[in-house]
Structures are given as structure tokens and as C-alpha cells.
Image (cartoon, rainbow, N blue to C red):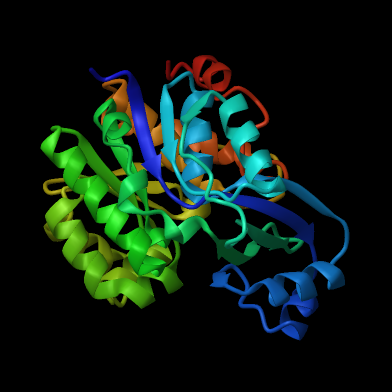
Length: 330
């Protein structure tokens, strides 16, 4: 029985969001607009040096699933937390958002719940410094086959490839979904993540992925293309269906026989780009799960991305279902 629209697997993180200027990034050796895996001491040094921060539950796939729920969809999530304060905050927040989350916390005494210190520059670009904590130790025993089987689409977060244990769980989940006749979607997550796992990603996309999400930098890195046009051409041959975001240029839906351009939804001011790709995926996946055509699904994605970049934080502050209804998309 399919009682969830989308079930995802990813990192359970608590985001600490602060603002800084470009000089701050340079002083601390941060690459603007990227995600770097860091240890606890780096997070502490950045936290101590930056201004006031906002703490909220995050994680790429988790943000997407909260977005699906905000559209009125039924979402489930599988991810590992510790039995600590951040772990309890994460569990409360994602369940309060309407997402099914039943992964038991790890026993106390080990790695803490992961967190991501997100530095936002005045142009809205975000630079993420992520301590994964216990999150990548998600094991096969925590891959909830019943929950995966209950969803129309399984959504996988590319960041999970950064640890062998999580990678194995990721592949197991994809196998369970395929055997249950479900679609498998994946996001490439970050160009540096693609650089680390290019061959694995290429093989996995070809063999196991029905719906691929990427931004322009990620898809260009995946296929080591010289231009977006070259990357899109290769994607048509390698992927069944891809949704590629291009910031203010909107997005392109790529299939084997056509490319559909979707304009970016208007936004008065870009405040914080954290979560833009995550929320785009939420709209697109929700649209597909509800039987919408590719263009409508892409427009739902653009709508959600525009909402989330208009304020600080990676989760919607307005019900996406209401915005979609006003736009005539639902």
C-alpha cells in the first residue's frame, strides 16, 4: 500500500545559520558557496568567531521532505541521530512538520547528532561547514523496508556517499525500492561531493536512478563537461529523467527525447539561498507523486525554491500548498 508520496534517506542535522562577509570566509579558509565536512573543533572556532546564529533542524533530504509535507503531501524520513539535545530537537521538528520519522536514536556515549554551521554572505550565498556526527553511521538494520515500500518515490541524498556504512544503507534502500516497484530519486548534493564520488555516482545514476536532481555546477562536474549544454546533452543519454536547477535562469527538465525549460519564480529579494535546491526537489517530487506533468512539477519546484530563498533558513515559512493553489498549480 502506498500511503506516502515520498520517503527519503539522508543526514539528520541541526543547522546553525549566521551571517558574515566575504572577508570572514577568506580569513577562515572557507570556499564560498560550498559544503565542507569538518570536525567539531572547526565548527567551534567558526561559531565562536561569527555573530549571532539561528538554530533549526536541517539536512538536505530532511528539508525536501518537510517541503513535500508543506505542499500537503505525505512524507517519511530515515536518518540517524544521537540521544542528545540536538537529536531531540531534530525529532521534534521533523515530526511537528508532518513527516513520518521513526528511526531510533543511537545509544548514548558515541558520536553526537550532526550539525551544519551555515555562513550566509550579503548576496545570499551560503557556505556550509558540516559535522556529520552520528548521521553517516546509519546501518542496514535502520533501513526501514516497510516505510520505503509505502512510498511512491524513494529520495536519496548524495551526501550519504561520504561514509561507507551510509553508502551501503543507501544502496540497500535503492534495491528495496526497485524490488517494490517504486521510483528512485537522487540529488547530487554538492559539486565537491560529486568530485569525491564521480565514478560511483555515474554508475549509480545509470543503473539505479529514475529521477536525478542537480544544479548546473553539479551536473557539469558529474560528466566533466565544458559547458552546461554539453552536460545536458550527456545527461539525456545517461539519465532517465533529470531536473537541473540554474539559479535565476530557472531549471531544465531533461528526458531522453526533450528538454523543458522552467522559468524561475519571482522573488522580491534573495535573502538566503540555503535549501533552494532542496525545496525545488520537494515541489518536483510532490508534483510527480500527484501525477502532474513535468512542466507543472518544475513550476511547483520553482515556487518552493522562491519561497525558501526569501528568508533565512532552509524550510518554508508559508504553507506551500496555499502558494501553489494561488498560482493555479494545484
